[in-house]
Image (cartoon, rainbow, N blue to C red; front, side):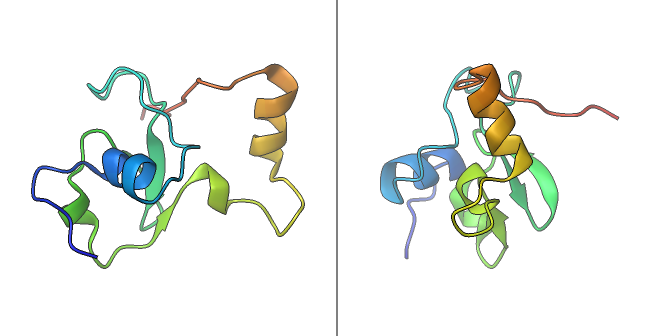
Length: 91
C-alpha cells in the first residue's frame, strides 16, 4: 500500500483500513484516544505519519483479542463505557 506523505497513521487506520477502534479526538497528542502499539511501544497515531510506520508491527485495540474472547482491556472498556477514552501512561 502506498500512503500519501501527509497521511497520519490515525488516518490510515481509520479512513483507509477501516479499523475504527483507534479513536480520533484531540488530534494534538494530548488525550491518548488514538494510542496504538508500534513495535511494542505506545504511539499516538495522530502524531505519527503513516510512512513512518512502514515495516513496523502495529497493534490496535482490534488486534489484542484472542480469537473471539475479548482481551481484559477490551472487556473493561465495554464494562465501563469507555468508548472514546484513551490512556497513555506517563513515565
